[in-house]
Image (cartoon, rainbow, N blue to C red; front, side, top):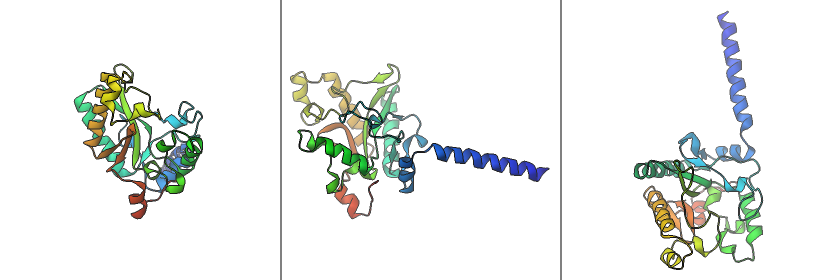
Length: 229
């Protein structure tokens, strides 16, 4: 009798774990295979709303047809958790919200095909030149969400706005010209503070983009890191 019960329990566990595996996308399994981690399995308080899983992005169509989770290299993921804790310590109702993390190179190619030869070309890394840090699991696009207001806090322009208003090196001028508000500038500074004090580096052209430890594609490939196909 006990052996029969044991067999039933084992079968149920196998069925349960198989069901979980089947719900994971091909992209997710590929990222796990290369050692990346789903950040929400480490900290569920970090919000995820992948902008390329929806049509509301600079390309204007859904690019992530099967990916809904945000994956990062474990070092980068742990640094993001540190940033989340720091943000909550400063402002208890605030949470980081991730709009993009590891990005397959196939998607990078679609983005590049969209901007190649346009004024937005400098905002997207060319896959022919090894892509960018997103493709290796060491970059994240992130903003701040207020759980009391149930909305993101103002940053002047939307994440994925590929124009000069997104730059971080001329924010005083942007405020003076009325292109962003003083509140938005302060909010950007808060985001930079928690991210840079947790091991991330900024990108001049995008207030939302952060590279872990300032790694770039040349350093990553030289040290044996592989891009997600």
